[in-house]
Image (cartoon, rainbow, N blue to C red; front, top):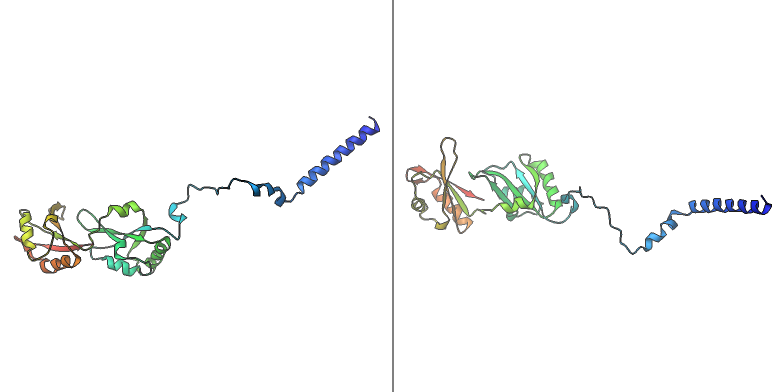
Length: 226
């Protein structure tokens, strides 16, 4: 091999090694430089497993289901208990079963922060209750009575709607709203009725005047529905 060819070979090897070293020595900042001028906006990775409930911690309505209520628990009790969560009576709905015994309450919170605050409050002073997450569909299914309806329990089997109307004499109510039905009881089925009133005041007046009064030969128990 001629000296000229040996020189060219050695020179090429040195250039290759130098080029590799220079490329490895290029700062990361310069190697990333072309990406800064990309016309395509980079999209953050989407995690489909992230719970949407956790994605908007500060805004948007959040729904919860409160367990541990009794038939004596009022919506005002819950609003007062969760003071600081910015709730109104319209943000609470009672969930009744078919016999109109309350099995829970649905609560609408103005934000995730308010829901978290309610969890802390219940943990401190409301240990009789348990607050669970719920969704909007559970809230929408419940129709609130808002204290404008009364449940009549113990209506005689042979009583007619006219008998119920006579029982409510002296009260302001919607006669067309009277709904009489049977529900399972401890021993025998119990005949009940719901009646709507024009206002909470009229419903409460009916409760005060007629609770434990008699329809035919049966004593009737009244309860204002929330």
